[in-house]
Length: 112
Image (cartoon, rainbow, N blue to C red):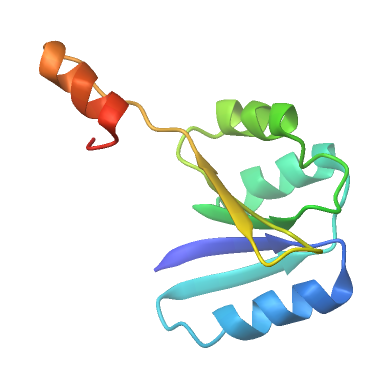
C-alpha cells in the first residue's frame, strides 16, 4: 500500500483529486489543508507518505522549494497539479550507482 498525502490550497481541486484517488485500492490517502511549508515538512515527517500531491497555488511549489523538499526526503515523489491548466508535474530524487561508463549513459538516457 502506497501512502499518499494530498495538500491542496484550492478546495474544488482537493475534492477532485481525493475523489479520484479514493477509488484506487492500493493507496492509503491522507489530506491536509496546510499551506505553510514548515508545517508541511512536520506533517510529512509524521505521516511518512511516499507521495505528496500539491496544487500549484501554494506559495512553496516553486522549483527551488520542491528541490529543497526532495533533499530532505530522498524517497519522496512530489506531484504538482496545475489549478489552471490540464497538466501536472512529477518530481522525485533518484540515486543511481555508477559502476562504469554505461551506467552514466543509461542514466542520461533515462533507462535507470
